[in-house]
Image 1: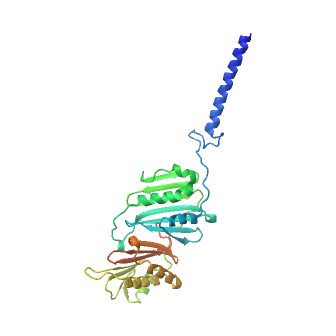
Image 2 (image 1 turned 45 degrees about the vertical axis):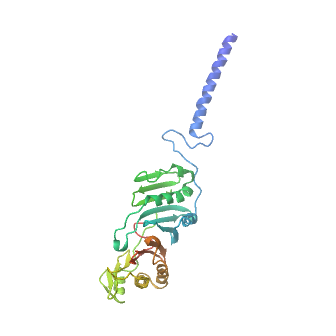
Image 3 (image 1 turned 180 degrees about the horizontal axis):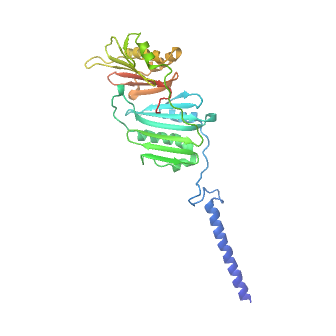
Length: 321
């Protein structure tokens, strides 16, 4: 009799132990115990603690410390800040940061590509992947928090997109051009470019009254020691000055004068004066190119070693960027 009781008791203990193992395994796997990250079943979403909100000004501060120059591109309805840097190989790097309520960074777009050169001349392509990888780390770590560790390595594939609890991240990587974007869930779309308020024909006609010969969309001066040309479209105005073979380099004074002629057609009054002061201070940019957002305009200055120069003016949020 005693032997039977011992056998029954032992069997009951085995059953209890089996139940503990099964239930404990379920709780551990489902994250009920110890604050786990989610279940291992295919239908169970893996989650991580959400990153704390990041101020857009915090990101621009981090970029400024890496050699970027940042501007308040648009105050409303979606505040946009833009940061620019030109690499030593001529690659232009643009970072746009869109904010949601309370200055919280909700959208970040990164773009790297060679600038087009004067009158669209071919530029030797540089390294676009390296600079974008740098910026991904600078902005991605504070934006994503622990989820940053789950991102694929930038440059391993041409096109990649990852959805996280914070939102979505996408990459495109090519040797000569690369992009990345961070979009928080529920964020508004990044604003895009518009046309000039002035008609291109009107700007061209006005320049024709101050010593230029003009057709519908371009002008050349009636007299100049250089090859000077202005061109106008609904979303872009340019002024370039190129020296003739065997002739003297284009001077700073010539560029200041020609750029001021263009700016007076694109902008009015104090807006034109503010833009001109910025351009005058950037006639010979480091690494051949510089851009910035001033007086409601996007300004870009290119200069070659031989002195040739070009000013490109577009609305503050350029189309395609």
